[in-house]
Amino acid sequence: MSLPAATVHGDWGSTRLRLFLVRNGTVVDRRSGPGIGALPKPPASVLDAELAPWRVTHAIGRVTLCGMAGSRNGLAEARYADCPCDEAGWAASCTRLESAGTPVMIAPGLACTNRNRAPDVMRGEETQIFGALARAPALAHGRQMLVLPGTHSKWAEIEGGTVRRFHTFFTGELFALLRDRSALTTADPRPEGADEGFSAGLARGGQNLLLGALFEARSAQLRLGRSGGWATGFLSGLLIGRELGEALALHDGDPSPVTIIGASALSCLYAQAFAARDVNVAMLDGDDCALAGLAALDRYLTQETAP
Amino acid sequence: MSLPAATVHGDWGSTRLRLFLVRNGTVVDRRSGPGIGALPKPPASVLDAELAPWRVTHAIGRVTLCGMAGSRNGLAEARYADCPCDEAGWAASCTRLESAGTPVMIAPGLACTNRNRAPDVMRGEETQIFGALARAPALAHGRQMLVLPGTHSKWAEIEGGTVRRFHTFFTGELFALLRDRSALTTADPRPEGADEGFSAGLARGGQNLLLGALFEARSAQLRLGRSGGWATGFLSGLLIGRELGEALALHDGDPSPVTIIGASALSCLYAQAFAARDVNVAMLDGDDCALAGLAALDRYLTQETAP
Image (cartoon, rainbow over all chains, first blue to last red; front, side, top):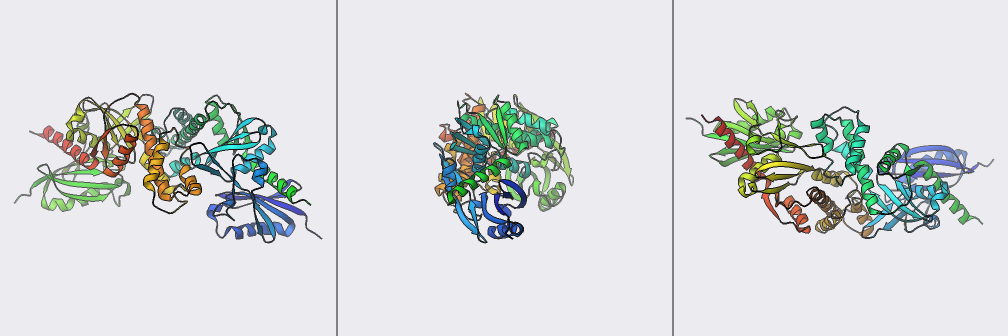
């Protein structure tokens, strides 16, 4: 008796691996594993071990992965497709490997050179972007701004379904460093007050200060009786507010509709920041978009290999 | 036979203790010890142990300390004198203790409330500021801007010898976090290229980008063959450039002469950043100014206690 056919889609980032077993376009099982940044053994061995239980029950025709799986420390260093780039150009740049006889496709990242700036790169977010275009076809019409908040936030300009260019903001990693590794949030141990702190930070971020506003997280605890929770919220609001300030200044006069793609809690903080600047936004779930992007890539590869 | 009389001056910061034995206005010996942030035992015991060798050879009339000695984790939480504040107002706010029968004076910090901002505080830099005024009396004339680069850079506006207000920039601590705790400088191990990177970062800092420019330190290694040394220099130039951008915008139209007070290597980086904006600066050594400030405080206390 032959095993039922299936494909595996996976988002392998720095901090976690998420694998999805897909049959006839439907996710029928999922597994989680370690991220590329914290692997106990070589990535190929980790992938083999994670796939093993599914090989018992299914004939896996292909594994399609995105994210840091394609980085220097991943399965293989995958290409960057150059912007401007549409779905076909992106999918055509896939890197092809094999795992225990099964073809493994790694999605390319995207690269672009902004005017007067160093080249910029992304790995993983491009899959969410093409997934968003698949899930919300209206995004393929006209000009759109897609904002993907996270460790390294990406602002991508889309036109007619093509990624024209994008810009990285170091917001999430900087927030984690300041929260966990500085003395800015530790003067007062009380956890409450984060929402109030966020609003205060957002207002401060609307001014043209970042280096000159960070220390306020601490001095407000020392001199105004604010809590450590308030200070953490303040840092979050300040950094997100500054990201919007810098990004909107870069796109001065661009009236493109904005769609936020990410986890809901973080997306809502960004939506608050946009609302404070009277900008309306749409929101899409980041995991849904990643899965849709992997499915789009898989469809492309299926057509390509059809007889 | 009685021991020769002496006083001890000390700058006890977060990372190190520097003590100076002073006789007739001259430093005759010096010792170094652990900073307030890394003490092996209670600060009073550490101070006693550090003073012990000098007690054998000198009659110590007074110990005068500045910096984090007066913080919550120091010898005693010293007051903040409120701005505007001149030398007499500062010196009058000293905190008085005793160590094995010897009077110990702790310099107050300074506090101020900037318009539309949280209160700001300093501990240690005020002693360098009053020391600078003692060493360079011309600074007491008219309006002056004193810039004290460091972990938490301070920009102090002086008028007629009085500290009117000041503003803290989180530049030094942020640079150390990004250099040591992020992936921005580690993609390429080569150490060379720091000067070129500093110039590139300074130029980028002249634009209105910080969150949107940090990732360039990494992408330039991945895509342009820059070294890790270049990336570290880039971060330094970018942050110092942004500090100047933010600070000069805060003091828009203020033509006050600028004096940098600090260690010579760091002061020179700031001088380069000012030169890139066509601002001439004077420079004073930070250690010299700290010693001069402690001496000024000691003179004040001597007059005060004179019969």
